[in-house]
Length: 298
Length: 252
Image 1 (cartoon, each protein chain N blue to C red):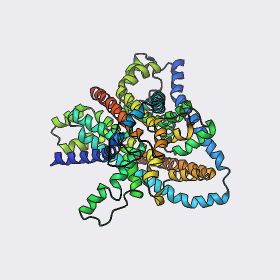
Image 2: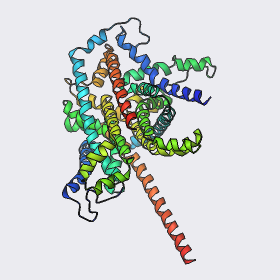
Image 3: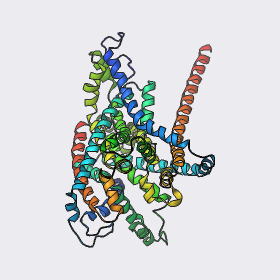
Image 4: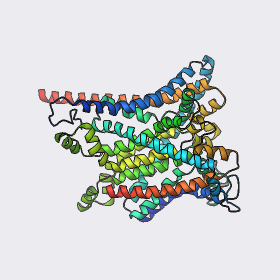
C-alpha cells in the first residue's frame, strides 16, 4: 500500500492540489494537537527543571534508578498479564453463542464505568488481610499467616492489571472478531484439529493486534498514578507516585526532573530497539546480497 | 475436559473483574455515609441525592466532556490512522505513530502541572485538550488496526476510478472500518469519563466532573452518591455495549 500517487486515474500525472492538502492535513492536524497538548506543557516542566540545584539532582538520581527500573518491571508484568488474559478470553469465547459472549463482555467491561475509589475499595476487601482470598489460602493450609496482597508490589501489579483488563478484553474481542470466518471454515474442511487451527489460523491472525495491545498496556501501566498509589506499598512506589509525592511536598523542580527522565527513558529504550532492529535487518540484507554475489561468481 | 477448563478460565477472569464491583456497587443502597461492607440498612437517599443540582451538573459536565473529547480524538485519530495505514513506510507515518503512542508514557500528573502553569484553573474548555490527548492513542490504535486490515485492492480500485484521497478516506476507508470507529469512540469516551487527575488539577471550585466530585465527597467520608452514579452509568454502559456488540457481530 505505498501508492504515492493515488487519487489520480493517471498514475504518472502530478497529484491534484486537494490531494496534497489532504495528505498534509492527515499529518499536520495530529501533529498540531500533539504539539499544543503535549509539547507546550512538557516545555514548562523543562523550564521548571532549570531551577533544580546540583545537590538535589544528585540526591534524587540515587533513588530514581531503582524506582524507574521497578516501574518498567511493573508495567511490563501487568501489561503482559492483561494482554495474555484478554487474548485468552477473546479466543475462548469467540466460538460461544452470541448471547453468552455479549453477557460476559458486558460483565468484563463494566468496571470501567465504576469510579476508581470504589473499585480499589472492592479489591482491598477481597485481597486484604481479612479478605476471602487470604482466608481461602489459610483454609487450604497453603499459608499460616495472611499474605500482604495489598500495599505491596503484588498489590501494584494487581491494581494495574485490573485497571488495564476491561479495555484489553474489549480490544482483543474486536481483534478476534475481525478474523475472516472463511479461514476457519477452510481449516476445518482441510481436516485441521482444534490445536492446529489455533496454531495456524488464530494466533498468526491475532498476534499483530495482541502486540499493539501489549505496547498500549505497557505505556498505560507505566504512566498510571491512582491505582498504584492506592494499592501499592510504601516501599514499592512507581515513578508516577514519586512525582505525586514530590509535588505534594512542593518540590516542583525535582518533580520536573523525575517527569522528564520518566518520559525520556522509555522513548530512549524504544529508539535503541528500533535502531537495533534496523541494523539487524540491514546486515541481514547485506549478508544475503554478498552470498548471492558469491554464488554468481561461482 | 477441555470445555470445563475453558469455562473455568473465563469464569476466573470474569470473577476477578466483577467481584470488586459486586462489593462496591451495593453501597448505592447502603445507609452508611462511608465505605463499608456489608451494608447494615438500606436506603434510596443516594439516588435522591443524584437529582440535586451539583450531581446533575457534574454528570452533564462529564457527559459533555466525554462526548466532545471522544469525537475530537476519533476525528484526529482517523486522520492519523489513514496516514499510517496508507503510507506505512513514510517518515511522517512512523513519527506520527510513535508520537501518538508516546502520549501514554508521559505521566498524567506531570502533564497536568504543565497545563496548570499554562492555563491555570478554568472551566470545562480547559479540560477538552488534555482529555482529547489522552483519548487519542486509544482511538488511533483502534482505527489504525481496522484500516490496516482493509484489503489493499480497495485503494487501487478507488485510485483507478479517479477518487481523490479525501473521497477515498470518506467513502472507502471510513465505511470499511465503521465497527472500529464506533469502538474507538466508545473507548475514547470511557477514557475521558474515568479521568480524574486533570479534573482535579485544572477545574476551579465551581466546576465539577463525576470523578472530581466523587473524589471530593468520598474523601470527606460523608457521601456515597458516587455508587448510585456508577450504578446508573454501568447500566447505560451495558446498554450501549450490547448495541455496539450487535453492530460488530453484524459487520464481521
